[in-house]
Length: 111
Length: 112
Image (tube, rainbow over all chains, first blue to last red; front, side, top):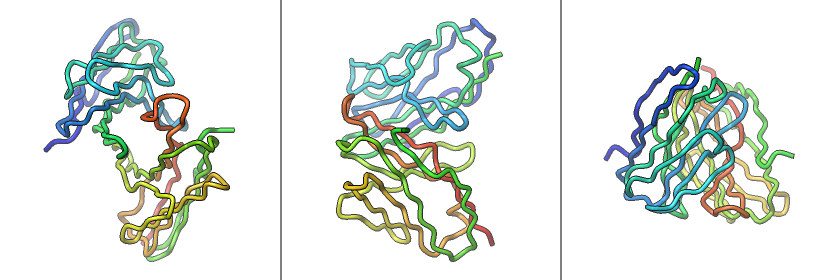
């Protein structure tokens, strides 16, 4: 039982490049989330998916898209990376009313 | 006013000490409350949920005060391994009930 897994662990992009962050969970949770964490800002929700086939915007969705591929997988795409998207990205999953369980994170640098 | 506010610390305490953190939240309709811990350069990990009647898990006690809109975490007999950042987490009704708002965290260092 791996919990929540994320790939890649680290990534460096040039401005304008695109990439997809992958997330998978094996806990059979319905809800999945993408957050970014910046120093002094706390975790901020980018997008979430309450169930397979649905996605909704969070607090900071601009510049991102998501796909809930199936119940296990939830990907985050940056179409045209910007330096402001340099951050640590965490995926999480949950089953209400429990708390959320996080993956190990992806450290992204955009130059 | 921030939606979830915590004292950033740092709190430096000797091993064996008792330490308490408070967290205030802005939305009186919030229903779900949690404490997470986050080690340096790691993901947040769920420490405990916070229930209306208060709850305890070993050396950790969490309490909720709805009237004053704050939650607290008490750590007794601190261990070196308790050194981490503690995040207060609250759901914010108005959006999805699944949307949680995270505080910026309180940093704890337990000293030998």
